[in-house]
Length: 431
Image 1 (cartoon, rainbow, N blue to C red):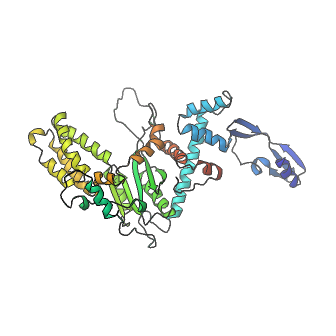
Image 2 (cartoon, rainbow, N blue to C red; image 1 turned 60 degrees about the vertical axis):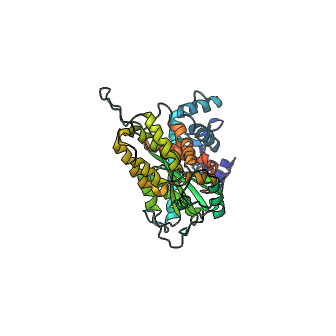
Image 3 (tube, rainbow, N blue to C red; image 1 turned 120 degrees about the vertical axis):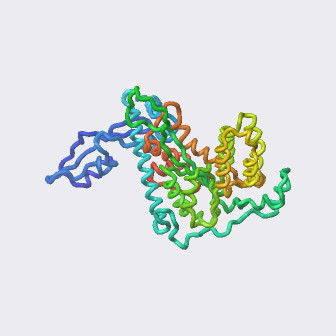
């Protein structure tokens, strides 16, 4: 009826049914709709396939919002494209004429690419005039954070009195990582996720290589005031650019930025370089990765598992309580007859010297209910990438992995309805 009303208003002299039906892929099935053209003596006046409906290319289907939710949010982000296609076609009783899995793959990739472009453009617009291409702030009106606000000394002393560890008098309060006020802090976790990379071409069976190749996605998780948001990018620089735009858009600059990492040298360097203008920022080395690092290095350094475990039992409590200098002294005093590989001991000493300012008093922070690790970020890595893309036999190209991960963040951030309906994201912290 709406088509006829529009065409009649054009005062056309002739109407004709379009040869190509309008194709729609919906949550309840695939459908074809008849469209019309209106003519006068000079040719086509109106085409309802272009005016009434969203213009499509030949053989292209219009995807309804319900289909995108069903196929992409409830399907692709959890199972393979083949399994998702088989399931939705079975539910819609369209096993023969349903949506092929290759088509579903292409549709999801296209949606992800559009979302990435939208987020990149949004970040560029928000950062324009505030930051240069290297992330350096050029707007003097943006808050620099000022002096950090720590928890009341009474609470710190109370937590310290509950510890049974034998500190020297000034050690806990002399740690380079302060005990920040949670209400004035934005907790940020940044980490890379590495699904297996797809081979560009088939290799000869005679050539045997054992090199593992991966694609790299970067996932950032923000938390402030009980609300969170997740961002993804193709590299650390892209993710930090999105992060800067998000902090600016949500008026979070001025708070303390507490950034949790796994201690990767390039990642820490990129963060420090990008936020060197900001006065109230601190990197914290995640406890899990610190413990893992020492367990692995001491396994290669010590003569046997027993000696390694004895060393771990001595050194890890020192690090847990933020006593980095004591841990370095212990490493240097290990008897040479117990060491298999002195270079690995030296690597640990260098590692601690390099990360000394990032190692807090984990014990006291735990007693003060402050975050110690990037475990929330690790969980977001699983939800955004690993759970879907690291299954046996799966491999990915760079764009394909990132496109799907970005679609998954729509689900995590509860942004998919707004995106599918309006092609816009709120870009706001959400409960």
